[in-house]
Length: 238
Image 1 (cartoon, rainbow, N blue to C red):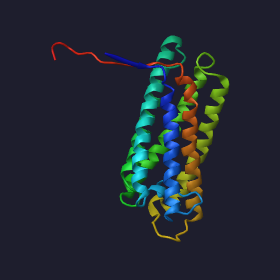
Image 2: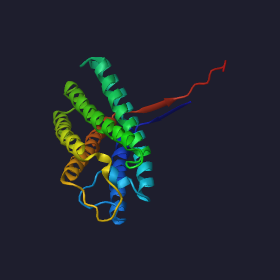
Image 3: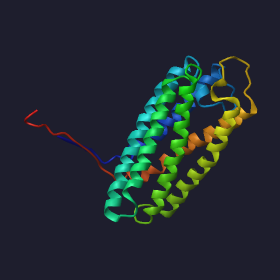
Image 4: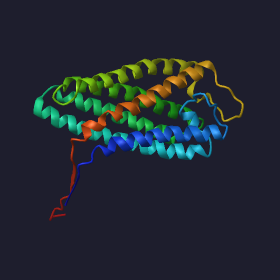
């Protein structure tokens, strides 16, 4: 039995829409409940308190799974392209995929362990998500340049590299500022104002997060030329 679809582009589309909705919905709920200040809180802050914590955990978990699926399909696409053209070392693509999966695991940890309940685990997951995520999109940008012009347009390569560079520039002050105040120092108390370091780190965090969203948006055109196939075979001796 075989199943196939020519709508592989739906995967990055769903990832982009779902992840954006996850960030925005939890932010809106947290602001309306008075659990965070309206001016750019940490993304994790918007999913710390009840009732938005349940929504945040669920939507971010699904985002992590969609991200891993998208990365896997992207890995297979580049693998086939490289087999035809041999434009780079085959291990480069696998290393990029592996780093991306580690980032998705980190995102799953962020969704599962609350910021104020298991702070060290949550922070480790957040660090893995953003650092591995930035490295992944940077490596994917390099792959795009190596496969240009046969498999990618020059303009697309420039866009991807620009997003990667911006995300790299934002992730360093995000980590540096967070180290001054501690990511897990936020408490769900009305009227509590975050420090300038907290806000600066949070702004950078949102830049990196939507940098990821925008980067995956550029995958849609690549996925349009792909057919996904799932085959099932039954063995007589089973």
